[in-house]
Length: 443
Image (cartoon, rainbow, N blue to C red):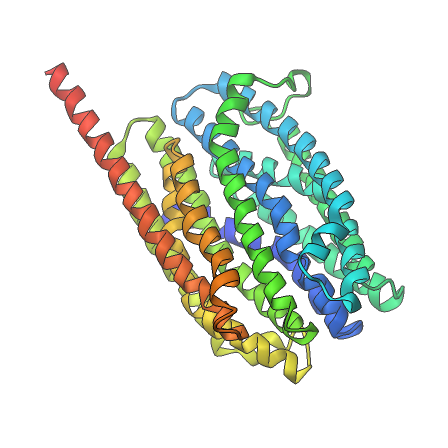
């Protein structure tokens, strides 16, 4: 199982990292060719974009869990219905989020306290980026369908091609056409369009139960219910999580554009490390979902333990690589020494402890693979989101400073991990007791 999890998770991690590279290339290009204020404008949009994207990402986890369960039960009919329903959710959800994002861009950035000297650029970037959200949604849901059957390589190949395209268009639009922040956002949206088209072609050509059949693209309300029941709590958790990060970003914004730029540059490396955790989340959902569907609880426990161990090892290794070569990596985004100093501060505190996030992220994924989604969502919202918001409003006024602001990350990871892991063991104990009672009745 160890090798299978690695074969599944590592391409998934690379896929997510390549997706994030779209934004990282945006940040790097504007940082070097437009200036620190443009870097701040693009980077400060991360939590806002995450607010919308996390809802779709959470729903796509529902797709992964539902399709994996049907595959574990060897039910091709329900698998096909779940695939068709998922793609309709992807299209409709992506369009709705794009419209809301474009309409509310300025209002959200104003609520975050975005400084006047970067406001117009930030609004322009966000609105241009939102044009590509429907395509991003289609790709994410399509990739979740393929990953349900263990196919993580083809989504990776698609992202390699679209990532190269995005980088080339960034240089053309910004360096040669002098388009500024709107150029990098448009380049990202075009790359998302290419990714979506490629994933749809793959699904249309698949003649198995996970294939997309144009003549049966009708929603199945039973499958929709399963996707929403598992995915919506995860999406809401992601949105609330992003909201708490928006509150933190507003606190960062209060320190000025240099701190905003340094924080934005360092944040890229947190995303890369988080995607290692997220990859083993996906592995946990797929492996646990299939084994739970087949009634094999011993393999469920083994998959959870392996995913947790591998998530910690890979995340921590990447964390400390970035810290070890911090000057090299931050230098990719800016040459401003003051901006880099603030980036170093964030990297030392946040990256130094980020592997603690595995405690609740992978455990929550394991629970969702078994159909339990609401409880880990509630615990994550309490331990991570509420704590971070409370930290900004109650602790920071008494203990101001950028470094003190960053301390909330490791503290929130520890608290949330304790709650979610406790819930996992209680849930597994109940399942074991139920299975034992059933076996006794049979005897």
